[in-house]
Amino acid sequence: MTRRPKTWVEISKTSLLHNVGEFRRILGPATKLMAVIKSNAYGHGFRETAGILADRTDWFGVDNVDEGIAIRKNGIRKPILILGYTPLDRLRDAIRNDLRMTVYNQQTIKALSSIRGARPARVHIKIESGTTRQGVDGGELIKLAKLAKGSRGVEIEGISTHFANIEDTTDHGYASDQLRRFKRAADALRALGIDPRIKHTACSAAAILFPETHFNLARVGIGLYGLWPSKETRVSAQKTKLDLQPALTWKTIIAQIKRVGRGTPISYGLTERVTRDSTVAVLPIGYWDGYDRKLSSVGSVLIRGRRAKILGRVCMNMMMADITDIPAVRLEDEAVLIGRQEREVIAAEDLASKIGTVNYEVITRINPTMPRIVI
Image (cartoon, rainbow, N blue to C red):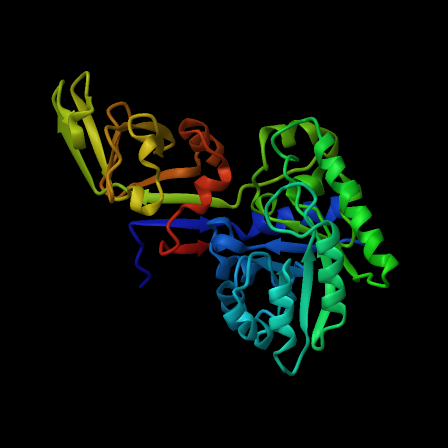
């Protein structure tokens, strides 16, 4: 007998595969698709997501060695690129598990060259083009590339960069400047006889908006899960007719129903009192699970296809919702925090707008210990 958890995340296999198909359509046959599954696959569950996409994507992108190893243990044989920093004492683990590494400093190259393994260390040099984050530029890029080219056991498989301002604007001049810098850097390397076979710059927004960023590999993250990188991206992308389907639904159940009189305070701090005789649902979920405390008294959930406002403060493991106007609610009825129930929808963007953040943060903060159920 399968036991239902008290709070869980459902992942739609159909929606994930649909989104892969949409990105395949806009990328075309010359560009391979990297499914970015870092940060627990943007909250969707990286093991579950990798299993669904194993036969539908060309590459996987992870943040660190441990994520890569976990995917390998799941039987994934596709190329995996570590997008984040790999500590020097984990380089051997990366090579042993055939994980490609993003590099941008000479110390990493020197350490890699001292490791004698059965396979070369395949690296992707991250070029600083204007994000002022990871990356190497100017004369340091040339020095790093020469060092890597001359290092035994090191293969420069790719070069990449990342755009700083392609999502939050409809003016993409800065992104165009970054692309020009990347191309100049690639030309400078080519003049030295260094021409890596893989070049990648496109994130989800770039993949959607600018074919010139596709090169031969695109790193698709947020869009893969059916979420738009931003409202601005969606506006700019109208001509693409891209149809994205959110793959995540976040659910809990009703743990208690109680009737309280007008003026009764709800939750910690007595921050909210009901203004009428009310029926309150206690939900066994809180900020430990990833439901932001800033949604206290402003968030809502779906119960029996209708919106139920959060009453008072969100607690660590519980919160309360007003079900006074929702008939026939029963103990252990489902409540939807993100997703669709009947005709109503609460999107990740709805939560993000209420707490002043982005949909990325909302979904990646869902507690990774929570069950992910593929439907």
